[in-house]
Amino acid sequence: MYGSVKDELATTLTEIKDAGLWKSERELTTPQSSHVGTSGGEALNFCANNYLGFADHPDVVAASKAALDEWGFGMASVRFICGTQTQHSKLENALSEFLGTEATILYSSCFDANGGVFEVLFGADDAIISDELNHASIIDGIRLSKAARYRYRNADMADLRAQLEAAVAAGAKRKVIVTDGVFSMDGFFAPLDEICDLADEFEAMVLVDDSHAVGFVGEGGRGTPEKFGVMDRVDIITGTLGKALGGASGGYVAAHQEIVDLLRQRSRPYLFSNSVAPGVVAGSLKALELVESSASARDALSENTVLFRALMEEAGFELLPGSHPITPVMFPGEDGARLAGQIADRMLADGVYVIPFSFPVVPRGKARIRVQLSAAHSEEDVRRCVDAFVAARVAVG
Image 1 (cartoon, rainbow, N blue to C red):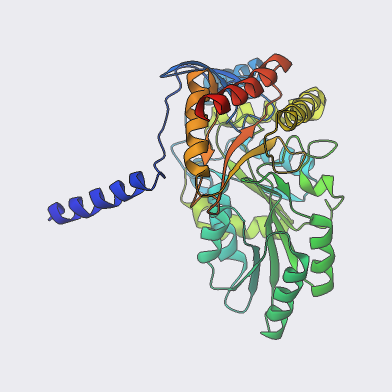
Image 2: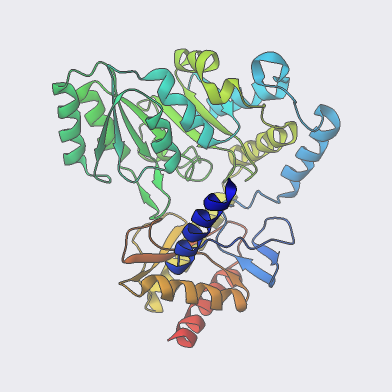
């Protein structure tokens, strides 16, 4: 029976390779860090979400190790059966206090958080108005809801207004505007102040996935709602523990008390997934403590980002504008995907690890290498990365 299926799958895989869209997985031979070992040798790492350098921070690692002795390896249960430890509740309370929300609920990942929130809160009489560049987890989560779906052009407030008007005209009961706080392929911020103004005007809720901001965006690292001064106007925040806050795993929904209470009763990814592992909880608590106790990592990250952008522009590379540590180096045109791939391969051979992105991850003709700065990078690391870009450009031609 599998014979014909095997041939069909093999054809599909060949088509992916022939289109230049094959995603290879290079193995790391060391812990995640700004300097890593790969199957091809040692390399500077400029493609991880390790924004604050906490993935191998000694205090975070020590807290996780201690938790193994105190709390064990895994929970072997979901939360409502026997999967809730004291430290799970402690982390939820700490996140709520940090983000300025009434309550927080932990998930196995932010993908699960986004997959579990829409079906519970929005039904057939409601409307979800979503930015066109929202993360795949938001798109998949929305698909699980029976609510009417509206999509607005990226960060386009005129189009958002038009979609809200359409939802009102259709008689939508509940309305929610959904956006990433930071769009991961571009490093652009959603204009949350303007979004909240429209939400107030149209009596809509606001949901923000702040995965690429929590821990380092905003004066206190509280993310895009803090940056735009709307912490008290965003109704639902989803986020991850798998990027700046230690880089391990786990996600959350932080929101009004009633929303979190209902998610605990009905959110399927929460009800039917094992609890976040004890070591991850303890490490994330320590990472959050580090964020709140010092701005040094955020300051280092900002300095590295400014330096990298300045040096790359001086060297004549095309960058998308912005201030986020996600810094896309653009290779436009029909031949851009091939060129970006060749540049990345050459840079890895020179000991600098970056990843190219092309269609369908980004639009056709807008291939890029997405460089991600970390607080753990030194000035020398940043300059070496720029030098590698220059050398690769010369070598590839």
